[in-house]
Amino acid sequence: MPVSRRKRKENKNITVYLNNEPLDQVTKLKYLGIILDHKFKFNEHIKDMAERCGKLIHSLARVAKMTWGIKQAAMDAIYKEAILPLLTYGASVWIEAMNQEYNRRKCKRVQRLINITIARAYRTTSSEALCMLTATTPIIINLEEIVKRYNTKKRKSNSYMELDHKVEYKYWPHPVEAVTIEEVVRDEEATLQAFTDGRKQQKSSGWSSGF
Image 1 (cartoon, rainbow, N blue to C red):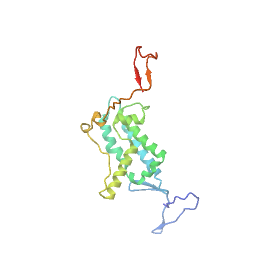
Image 2 (cartoon, one colour):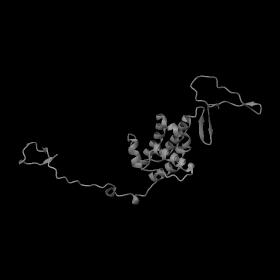
Image 3 (cartoon, helix red, strand yellow):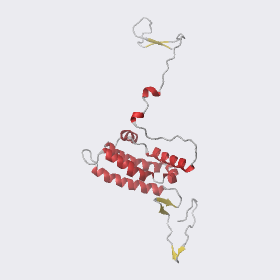
Image 4 (cartoon, rainbow, N blue to C red):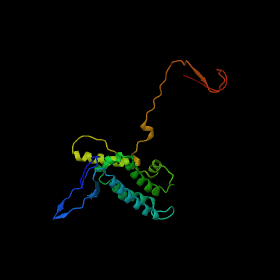
């Protein structure tokens, strides 16, 4: 498989012999589970990955009905332990391909299909709402997190990097303690008064606020 990113048209046929037999020239091949194309764009790998995950999800959807079949907890476990590793396998190699919107849509579509099955929601439900209903991280953020963790381990340095990790509900900070509200008291006189009742009279009913 000749690898080149040149845009100009040229003859790329190369004859290579092994044991006096010519080898077939291809434009893509699979190596260690990742499909490599002759331009290293990894579009074929993402397409193949999305199709395999889609077929698996459709097979699961036939047995995960609204009132019977696989329970939601089991579907969630299948997604995290089977489908998600398949979607994120080798992400550090092809993460740059996710800069293309059509590749991002393929991954989002796979997650959307499984989230509809887990939440048993309508197909018109938005992808963002499905992630909230199923408590799943958007697939694009998952990919970025995996690549960031891989790069951190690969460096083998003592440099500090903040990485998100799962925290149990009981350890979540209380919303009251997250934000501190301070009341500022000023002795300045208001230069403008606004009457909400529309009478523009200070002694009438209603209330006024000073600015």
